Length: 303
Image 1 (cartoon, one colour):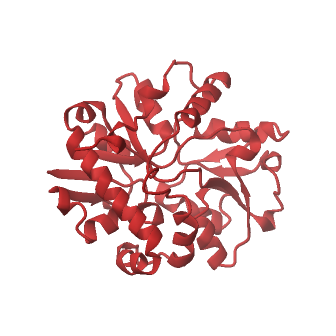
Image 2 (cartoon, helix red, strand yellow; image 1 turned 180 degrees about the vertical axis):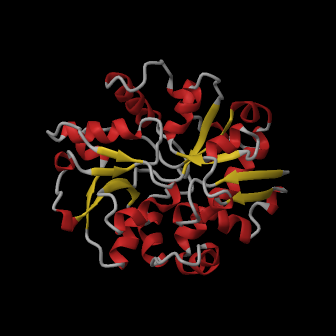
């Protein structure tokens, strides 16, 4: 069976398990032919979720809110999250230390480079307000694949990063960052990234996609337990101009991949708290239950 997986970003350690599973033949063990779609192929013209909606991909790697976004569109598209890459949120809002912005409230009247995700801008404003600011941040929408470079070059003051990727890149480049995590400012952010798929395929092809997750888990756990070998396999897939210490990035990431028993499993309480927070803050008016958003069923199926 052929499966097309749309990545949320250019290949990085968040994706290492997919590449390991492909290179070491774990997908082949289940008769799966997996094509990993790099966003550079279309310069992020379509988001991963949009590729799934349009039939260009079967699976998308995306944040939880992408699933919500497609359920709230005028023309709804029903997706469900089937596995989380990390057990905890590894993202943060990043600002270069030389700007002397040592708390979110000092982002008032500063600039923020946004990925233009559904709730993103409001979440940033809420973070500032929760820290005692007014939430008056200047939001810009540069090219998605170039956002990190706009922070490095001082074109914009802040953006949302993965600590285990851009955070490591900054350290390697001698750039000191102040990092503001959602959980430190009363924002119960959910899982990112997660593997999402159409509910129609979820219902009709459970065995095939359950096997995909089994092979993927094997790839991520191999990367966790064999870090040097995993890097040797993975590094050829990085963009040529990507400067990063993969060893350090994987060391940070691997702690959050989970174990054989818990890899990919999503805690319904984590998602419920995020949904409740979105409703309380008026960011989402539609009522969704946790089971409309995520399911651990394919991770737990036995054949």
